[in-house]
Each structure stands twice: as structure tokens, then as C-alpha cells.
Image (cartoon, rainbow, N blue to C red; front, side, top):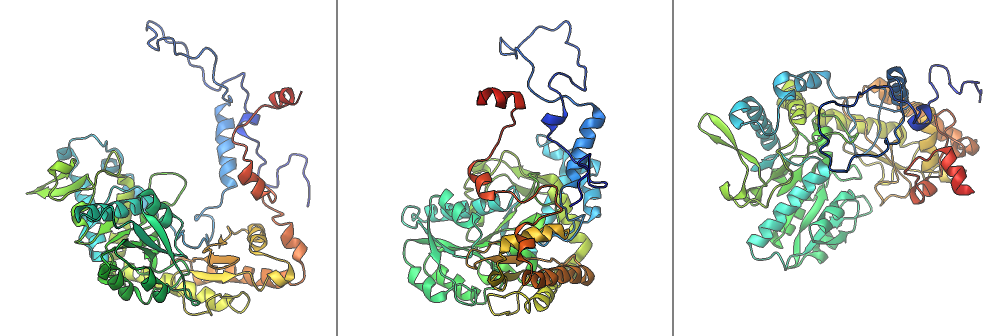
Length: 504
């Protein structure tokens, strides 16, 4: 590898930690002490300045721009993460979300001053209910896991209303479930009971039947499931759960594969969260504001949380307190109703596509996944026999391991090729899993480029395992000791002087 004097690599600038770049002895901003005002901190003011690095404006701007160049993003290239639906976010959505009337709202404004925003939320709710065939929707959950919590709290409230809150404590969860499913059930006070999968990646009906009983509160199931397959016995599963007196929670993370094609309410679902960032193209991840609306069946609709909207003549109002609601809400999910920018983006996406366009979203995402499967299954093992998939392609590393190459090695080699790796080692039911979701927004040409790279790497693995074991070679950071990083993380920067003093 060519070494440079500066540490830079062409136009990719080397960048140290901001603490190493800046100086604790200077600041880029001069702030004079306030005059004529009494100190109201009551002796709690700082005696010394905080140990924050001081940078000039150009230094600060360059630092963050350089860091941004080290990030991978959907705007930069194909993002093949499975079970995450990393799709293009149309710029029209962003333009609408930045309209002054939506961007400048305050959560404490009187409702009569935000009727347009409430009308947009009412329209979004109408679309969600029409698409899912459900009775009610809670818009307030902030993310998928928060939406799961909402659905399971509604189920718990319904059981308590039936006088079975203390007797029905067991929730059935397939072994291929997203990790948040058992975590959410446990957080709500339920006991998690795992359901086995069949050899072809579906819920084992016979195992499910043995788990049914008077103590079952419900099931948490993803459809399409995490193996990228549609649960063909979904109606039977719903009937079995309802027959045992439980409720059916569906994880809606994979709704992108069936939106406009299948209504979960028709499948017997009682509650389902919808990740707006996955199916309806709002920004994904980054710790920013999100939204995970939860739709509820007629059986659970009375327990939907506050606040929620009601129409009173020509005006829309928010029901803020449980005692003012028609039903018996289980409580409140968050301080305010939700994140307005996500609502605007999602509804913009829906209106620009229309019902036929949303149906095509599902069809194209499934088509793209099956195209990748057809191209790759001759070079990688498809653990479930290469049966047609839904929106995700599930492969494993069993054809690579005889040559000394594993899933982690392939993922690191992909970094050198300019791709973010696919989801690795998940679902856990497949050893060495490689989970790819192309989404509907990728062209055939882009899918071919990605497939060509994977096929070439599979061939190289047969003769050059050393290349994979030392990858990545071109990334800003080389391969890390991930086990040590997880067990001994360094969460706080210390100056070199402090480290020397500590050593002495």
C-alpha cells in the first residue's frame, strides 16, 4: 500500500479526533462576560472552563466534512443491509417537510392554530388504516421498537380488562424473530417462549400447537419473516392464537414487501407497528427523530394510547387525557404526539405514489430480491433451497468456509469494493448468514454491479484466503479487534499527558 507523508490518500483527508485537532487552551468564539446581571446559579457555576477543544470555524467545518466522507450512505451507493430497507429518500419529501407551516410548529401551540398539521396527520392515519385494513392507529410511537412496545402494552391492557392480566403471561416468539420482539415482550412483563422453525424457514405449526394453553397472551411474528419468506400458514397461526384466547402481534419491519398487496388485518393481525423509515422512505437511523405508528384491530382499538385525534365538526382536536377518551387508553407513549417531519415525508411519499404505485413498491422490491437470488445462488449457498424469496435474499458462507473464508471476511472485503456489507450473522437460525435487501429503488444495472462483485469475491476466496483475512485494505481504519472493542470499550478520550502520568 502506498504511504503518504501527510497521511491523506488522494482527496480523502486523514482526520484525527477533534480533541487532538483542537486546543484546550483556545476557543474559536469570544464571548464577553455579561454585564449588569446578577449571578443566579447559587454557587453552582463552574470554577474552571470545561475541557472542550477549541477550533476556528474553518477547522470545525472541515473536521465534520472529513468525517462525513468516511461514512457510507444511501446517497453514495447501494446499501444492501437485510432487514433494514435502506431505500432512497425522495427529495420531494424533504422539500415538503421544510415548508414553514410544518417545520416551525411547536408542540404546545393551541390546536386551533395547527389545524393544517392535524389534517395531514388525519390523512396519514387514513392511508395507514386503509393499507393495513385495521381499526385504529397510534401515531405517537417514535420508532419500530417503540411501536412494538405500544402494541404489546395494548395487548396487556386488553388482557387486564378481561381479568386475565395475571394468568396470561406467556408470549410465543419464533426463533427467527427480530431481537426487539422478545426484548419488548419481556419489558412488558411477559415470559417469552420460543417457537421452532421448519427446515424450509417457516414457523413450525406442530411446535406452535404444543405451546398453546390458557396462559398464552399472544404471539409476536414477523411476516414476511426474517428469512425473507412469507409465512404461508399465517391465517392458520392467527386462528390458533385467537382460539387459545391470545392476540396476534405482527412485526411490521418487513411491510415494504407486501404494502398495497396484502392487508395485515385480513390475516388476523391484532397489532402491527409500521416503520415509516422502511416502507415509506423517511430518513433511516442516525439517532434522529423517527416514527413507528402502530395499527390496532377492533379488539385492541379501545386501548390505543393518548394523545389521539378526534374530529369535532369541522375542527380536529387532540384527546390528551385517558379520562377524556371514549375507550380505555393504556396510557401515553411520549410527552407529545410525535415527529411532524416524519409524518409529512411519509404522506408525501404515499400521495406521490398513489395506491397503484405503493403496490408496485412491493412488487419491485420482491422482483429485485429474486433477481439477486437467481444470480448468486450458484455461487453461495441458499440455506432454504433457493425457494422464491420475498424482499430479502438469505445466503450463508458454507461454500466459503472450506477455503478458510467466513462471513466476516467477505464483509470486510466488500468495504474495499466500495460497498457497505450486507447484514451478517442474522437471522441466528442460519450459521454464517448473509442477508441482503436490494429494495425497489435499485436499478438492474446497480444490482448487476453488486452481484458481479460478490461472484468475483466468491471465486477469489478459492485461491486467496489471505486477502480476505487481512481486509479491509483501503478503508480509513483497518480490521479491528471487535471482541475486545465490545468487552473493553474506550468511551472517554484522555490527553497523552494524562496517560503518561497514570502510567507513572
